[in-house]
Length: 167
Image 1 (spheres, rainbow, N blue to C red):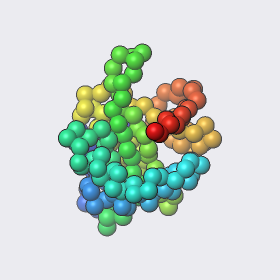
Image 2: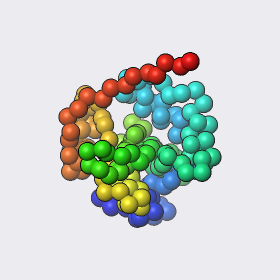
Image 3: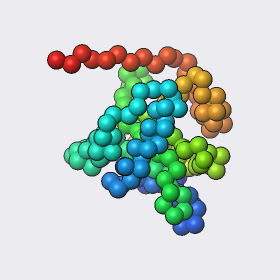
Image 4: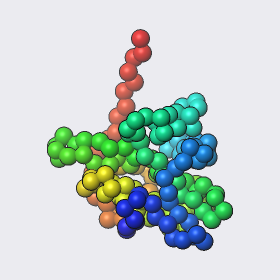
């Protein structure tokens, strides 16, 4: 599963492609992001998500976030992926953390998931990183089968979250 070093997988003008998001994509990214949160039984995304993403992606001197979009011919946004660079203490090196990967229901099974993962791997390579890591809910059997088919290594852990009290 490879993609060009630009972080973009492109099957030509007539086929689907994965590319870096531009500011104009972000209102469209917010829609599947809300679907993704609902699918994963999580709280809805933050109010004004498109603007929050724009600030992180386009207004920081060194953005921490990358956002890729899966686009069908005609400009239809089929899904998205977001990732950030993180450091693994035990490994003593950074990796790319795939925070979200979501394809809208009607666009699954078209091979887009592999294109998106290929673009994420290319993004990691472009950053000089040797690994991509991510989480998926234990009940999401379809995603688990997909990740297993990729040859990804499973690490059994529970993910926790703790809110920080605001002053």
